[in-house]
Image (cartoon, rainbow, N blue to C red; front, side, top):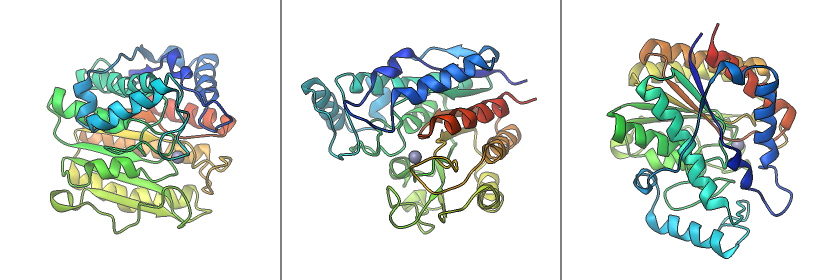
Length: 316
Ligand SMILES: [Zn+2]
């Protein structure tokens, strides 16, 4: 069995909308209670997130954006620029702690104290780019962890697998011109599904040409279409890139029961995807995976998908 770290902090529940919203504290609470009740939490190593140094955040985000976000929360604003992204007075602090959670998972995996980590954090991150929070995301947790691994642990090649049903536009933009971070995203893509980016021809730019790979899926796609994309697109990309560590933007909103999209992944699909990345990680990078929670809005399919994911990270 692998040593798997589990990152969580009760303060993650303090980021809450002043109105009904799908990205709610109830999501995370349900995950934590479920993993405790079925004994999986006891099989993982509990990791406590800290507040990151500002320099860890500034490798990814613009200082003016941080000041703007902090000021908006202090004023009591209830939304950021994009109307879909809510704020409360705690949001800036908890967004820092959420990024700190991804860093805690990355640190534990990089130092070898655990082989893999699952970071149950919120707010999510993959829509946030250098200067903009959007799509319920304030700071890009996965991108911050990637840069942390490179700066603090001398890791040169990081591979990000983003299977949230929405395109990870923020992560893509941050690393678009960077050949040291490979970004693979599989997501639903009719023209109207948020955020609208992530077409096949978005493959990177300048020196980063060829290290962005998008697998847009049509509405109604499910386990079989995802399995084919992993085999035909992800596998050769990993073999070429030879990563030193995997980060997963682990959204669970591609589940068939999730109300925010129209992809029909089952628990078996999440088992396959986790096993696929685990096998690739075993082959190329000593099994090192840092998985960071993104979306997933239907509570019962969210907790069952996370359970499947964690069981596969733990291994036999
Ligand atoms: Zn999503």
